[in-house]
Length: 327
Image 1 (cartoon, rainbow, N blue to C red):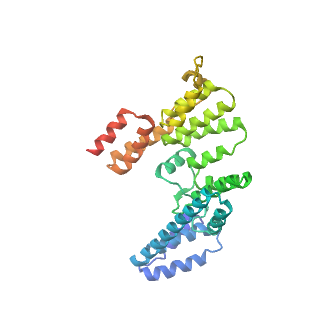
Image 2: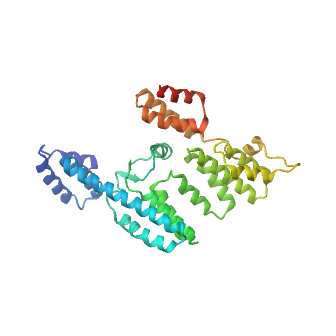
């Protein structure tokens, strides 16, 4: 029997009396505890039970989740504090118990029906759905899995433990494959210069904030610096400034300038295979979502997506759409 058929059968036994239905649903959890789809079934039944709790019980559950979140956030701040003091072992000793708890967690475990992610913002999920076209349902967890594993990776990097860092990064990417900071840390661990260049180019499809596009161009500049090609290094630094003003980048460019220095042209950079500007798929997706929400008169969502498109392009049309929503 399929998952949908099983859930339809379970729902057919509901009476409409919340107390009786909660008892019935708990029995159904036991009934299907050995079924191949038991994780998905139990999770769906859990949602049905939650819907039948009274307002006070639901509020208590939400408060419990929020409390756990705040506690995790506070712990991560503590870990960052010890990391800044370079007390890496102390920081790891604080973070490990959270990792162990997360690894035992079953509420947000992937199953045959859906996959869970800890995306930071809506466009990360929108981009994931567009690029990966997942066959299973995608759900976002309230738990900061990717942040915890990212910080775990940072600590192992600080200690010079490359393998442990790589393993933590893989976990972080599983939870949020769209996270720019995770991708940048992943790139920073690459020893092979050509792979570093290729991954930087590949990562353009995930980046939708100007600061991240600027960083990608700085990555290219680093590549050309190590290849002893200052003219291309200069060109990449110049492209980064189109997205974020940065005095340190300006200083680097000034240091490269000599009376006979000739920087690489935009055409040179294109021929070298560098993407010029933000990924057009990313821009188009943000604009498309924004326009759709405008048509639905859901202006908060529209502003969010159109602001992404505008920040990447400064397109006059998008600017006008944003201005009209303010009036």
